[in-house]
View (cartoon, rainbow over the protein chains, first blue to last red):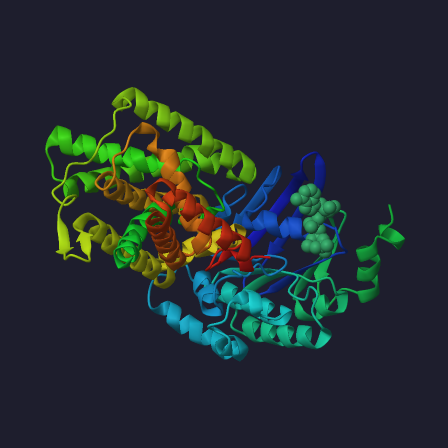
Amino acid sequence: MSLLEVKNIDVHYGDFLAIQDVSLNVEPGTIVSLIGANGAGKSTIMNTICGLNKPTKGDIIFDGNNIAGKKANQIARLGLTMSPEGSHCFEKMTVQDNLLMGAYLEKGPERMKRLEDVYRLFPILNEKKNQQATYLSGGQRQMLAIGRGIMSQPKILLLDEISLGLAPVVINDIYDKLQEIAETGLTMLIVEQNVTRSLSVSDYSYVILEGKVVMEGKSSELNESEVNDAYFGIGDFAH
Amino acid sequence: MLQCIITGILLGGLYSMIGIGMSLVFGIMKLTNLAHGDLMILGTYITMVVSNALGFNLVISTIISVIVMCVIGFIVQQFLVNRVMDKGEAPALLVTFGLSIFLANLMLKIFSADNQLLTNKMASVNVITTPVLSVSASYLISFIVAVIIIVGLALVMQKTNFGRSIRATSDDPMAAELMGVNTKMAFAAAMVICMGITAVAGTLVGSTFTFYPSSGTQYLIIAFGVVVIGGMGSLFGTLIGGIVLGVAQLLGGFAFGSGVQMLIAYIVLLVILALRPNGLFATSAVRK
Ligand SMILES: Nc1ncnc2c1ncn2[C@@H]1O[C@H](COP(=O)(O)OP(=O)(O)OP(=O)(O)O)[C@@H](O)[C@H]1O
Ligand SMILES: [Mg+2]
């Protein structure tokens, strides 16, 4: 059974239909990626799943609950954690307080163990634990956002464009860490604009074009040049 | 001169008590609560009614006033402010302005325009009486209460999960919501705490100075001065802000006569604003 199942959702911004009849599945223990050009609707889908946007049609089933239209904090309590586009660290708080906020729902001493795990994964965060997040570099804030997501020990972690605006070396670094996280068995739904990287990191991919799913399949079986055509809406995908 | 400075510092404690609620509401919600002074005077009247009608002493009356003001704070936040906060700062400001006018008129209807003083044994008692220096008990108590509340509040905000969630909500409400924080409730909790503290301030003010239904405006201006000098949202800044304002007022009175002492205090306020527009201890200035 799928951990997350998005069934035929529409999402509107006012009168504008941003997402049209999108369905997707995430099996437990896998990494699923959404690929698509700027403005395709990837963030809108992610934001709708985590409750920041409301779908105007369709259902979203997470771990047996229909979460469509629920508030973001209620969905978080069910074990779905999202790191939104642009990292959204708590700028005025220290690195450590940012991480502890990730475990806001976990009141016990378990938090300290998770903190150690995150520091082991990202030693730089340990070094900077008493600094305000606002003084971190772009790569470090992305690590902080991911670390904060892990702190909640979610059943699924949603990551929206963790490579946004970062240098290639830094991106490689972060994706290496993501592999390490995946090996612990954490289920993830990620957004990544780079087709090659997206296919190599994920088990299953969906290509989004103008608010619709235009191609999907096992990442290992998808043909990169066909994905590129779908991505830009050319060839068979022209309208 | 020494007398002025010591009394100014102690008076500053009272002023910072008046300012804390306003500073926190501003720091956490980016809301300038124009009803702050009227809410505080409402707290003073509640203390007065409880102690007159039920014959409780001031401490118990204040506790009851704190509880009532916490409930009022919750209602104000949940049913007035939270509803318009998404629409930007101006609508929320207007709501608090409307509330201010409503409260002042309501209190005028109920309590008439007569001035009042909370009767208490402390007002006329001096803890220190020497030829050069006398310190009144009510000023000293106000100062001590202010320090205790500020230190306690700072600890809660820095060290507890609850305090952290309030700071996170103020910093980035969307991200806080994604971490499982019910941000509307976090704002309501912040307002409840502010109103509880403001009720204590109300009792302290009412047992030090006479008050009447329209006193709120005068204390709003003091709160505003404290918050601006101390830096919006900074707790310890609030204490310093109160002290600066209190000392400036009394030294001004000493030098130029008590008729202009508040004027001198506000001139100091303007000078500080001109030199350090974000206050002496700005915390929200790092916001991009
Ligand atoms: N708050 C909003 N109000 C109105 N329209 C919006 C809003 N957010 C997004 N849109 C529109 O919805 C469409 C999808 O946007 P979305 O941000 O989901 O795309 P994306 O695939 O995440 O793009 P990017 O790769 O640039 O992040 C775009 O046409 C965008 O202009
Ligand atoms: Mg996006």
